Image: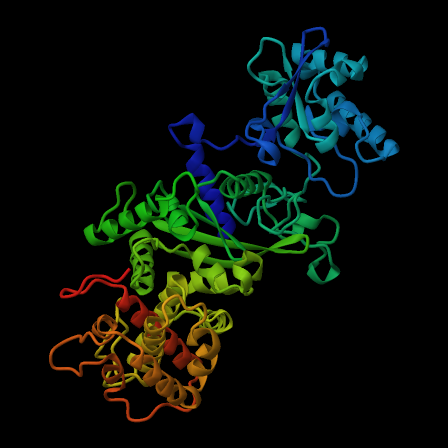
Length: 591
């Protein structure tokens, strides 16, 4: 199913009216080539062209269509008319002269394997002449030569005055495509297309998966007897028979989606996630913008995508694409030399948009004026990770959250656990953590409400004075007591939150009475202005002090709070703190 969807996406891109939107044809691939060796028709060196752009270590080379590369492991195998500097020039960059000589020989031999028609091409003859009388001294005079020695970059050739590379010349490209077909490959029925085709033995590597090998890894591969059956022991590809054209199509499509500059990929925890549809659709880039962190030069990209999502769901139509277009989401994670499928979801575009909107509805919570309207999944996950680092995000959590979003299911318990633990460890309920807790609690309430006659009310975006949940009110009370302390001691460095938050959120009965006594002392130090701020009532028919409002209808301070109740405590604390700094109808906002 996954390979078939990727194969269909490749075919869709090939049918595009825009040539720039098409993917490479069979036998070619797009490759980043940092350096181009420019030669004349006689094979004499003219220039070493640096195609890189950017600064420092972030320099990236220009991308070119080149003959499809061979699959490299530990052996020596050369690509056609492009490869790294060791293969092309025979320079030793890693202290292995014998191996470099083998690489240089393999690169030259590859040129000799081309058909006679290609070997007579002017460009190919010039390359062979250049390699025959290779003059490294001429290259060493170029300013970028030290970069070549340091990074062993990919290189290719171009004739002086031409626009295309030598490997892109019609005769050479046709010969390269012809040599892609392996006549010794056994024929069979391709599992992707259902057509009879030559079966691919080794599938090209998939690159761009975070944490996987830099040389690439595979989705389809096996090398143990446990996976060999029915006599399929001679050629590795026979156990998973996929034709060469289909293998090229799905690997080219997936590498395109995973490319560094792709607008259809995002990193969700340890899962590299890609999005695509059966037909051109708004959601292809919208989904990535919604889940991913916006780039620094486009900080509003996520917020704009969120507005477009709400408009699409409310209007029932998209700017580009139909509502019933099938949409695919694939999450990949590294697994030694292979790639594991972390999650795979497919759904109609409108249904997916509706579920995405519900996710952001659940996340919506009161925030400071400078708080971002759009909370990316990356920011959400890093806010509950130790030290706020992506490397410390709990394994599988990103994939579990994606699945919950796309299938409209409760969020995983690990999200609640991680959010509560971070709040307790750092004594701080931040905006992303408060949003995560509200979202988890509301989906859990929704799940429980399906089986009860008197459903519980879900938590609001802002403070809900009518909510009588004991844990929620304990969180509100803790925020009130902290506020009293701050007003009584202006400029205080550490508050009761820094010392008592962990105990108050898990065992309120052991801490709250002590803090109430301490609050009496703090209230005595308040001036008249401070009293007005702290005792502002929500309405005329309620007690005139915050403590009385919060403790109203609380029969007993709880002794212990379970994990979900600790989440309610944190949410109540966050809501009450935000209420203090929110402008009310009859009061100015506090600074």
